[in-house]
Image (cartoon, rainbow, N blue to C red; front, side, top):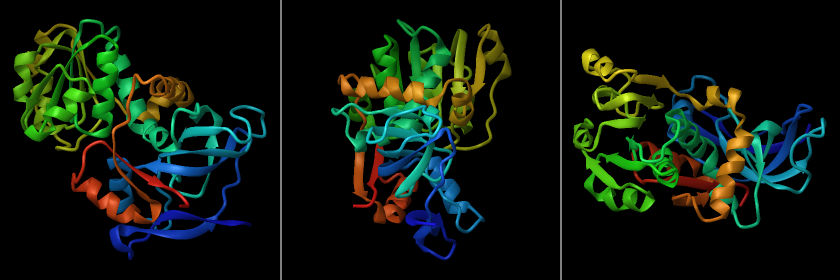
Length: 316
């Protein structure tokens, strides 16, 4: 069997990740073989890779590249098509077998680097915002707003006509989130600073801990809080009375791997790609490196060494 390079979990390597030779993938009938050009990093996958017990595990969710072999069942992009794709694992490699329902074609105006930021962060923002229904005139709070999904959410919410409030931990992120679409910015560790701009018809919450507890008491009647991260703490307490007194308020547990079962990644990615191509959505890329620097970039991500997205060019 032919071999290729891929990033694998190696407990003895720096950052527990190493570039190694592995077997090339053998696509199923509904999968296209993609030569990967760029990948982007997400906190969840990096945390999982750095704590994995299984040597040889293959991390990676986001990728962009070129189809080198079409799916045998005739679905999906043709050979030679530039694409963006989504995988549950194994994207950090020279080649990837990607289900055609997780692929979208790229127009010439969208670069591989831009496209690689869209699968996890972009789809999370897009699909989470849809839990709020029509957003025109609605107050929307985005916590963790300076991160990859947060910045996409700010831009998409404003594009949909919402009144958007960004919650960030540090004052220096004010300009960044306003540029991305925030009408107002609240700064603080526990989320209380955002209360004065509410109540909110929709809250996109990725911090957990005290922020989630406080957010649940800021919902408007029939409002929804979408919880999709716990970067600030996995346990939370909240005032139950304030929550149910709002009337019809809801807490929605969101994980993109579940959401794409009902709404395929290919559909959402195609929508995001069109927005990028027409200039309505701007991926905010802070770091671009050769993929051999994956360990150092992953460490910077976990240490909150940058905002926005980090992209690695594969095979450069």
